[in-house]
Image 1 (cartoon, rainbow, N blue to C red):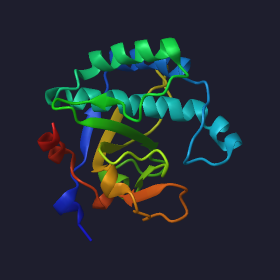
Image 2 (cartoon, helix red, strand yellow; image 1 turned 180 degrees about the vertical axis):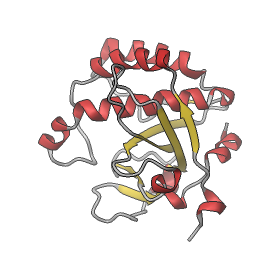
Image 3 (spheres, rainbow, N blue to C red; image 1 turned 30 degrees about the vertical axis):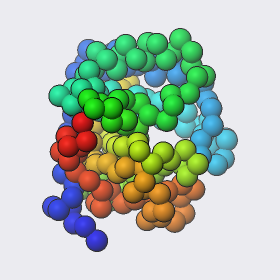
Image 4 (cartoon, rainbow, N blue to C red; image 1 turned 30 degrees about the horizontal axis):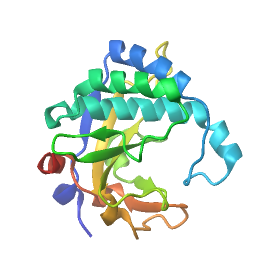
Length: 198
């Protein structure tokens, strides 16, 4: 079993108030429902739709911001991409959110820390992905945040916890009660190692 110090160093991204204000309308526009291979209860998914969109958009934008040196284009590229996607909300994203320099495809997974919001607590969570939608050559990045109950309604701090390639995630069931594949975040790759993929 890999240890925290060997494999996982959490990266912390702070979203500015300008960025948070820009994220909110895109999260609101994307609240249209859809299917999930993690939540097998449609009622559960509908109940969590607004929360999931806010968390997901903040994490996705934070990853673009962090990975600008790796060719993501930064927050401006995320904003332009979301503007295009919201013109056709029901179209799929192909299974990834971002393409880095060199063609590395990345799918960002965002989760809320419901207890203590610390780097240590984030490592006790799991990177999860639906079995049918796991692509072998896509990098799955796990992010964690907490809801922010101010006028922006968008989280300010996002922790980029780590990543795994899809072919390394397949078969992992660290959290057997989950519907999809799952890997404990303390065992996945540190974010700095993503540089060699781009």
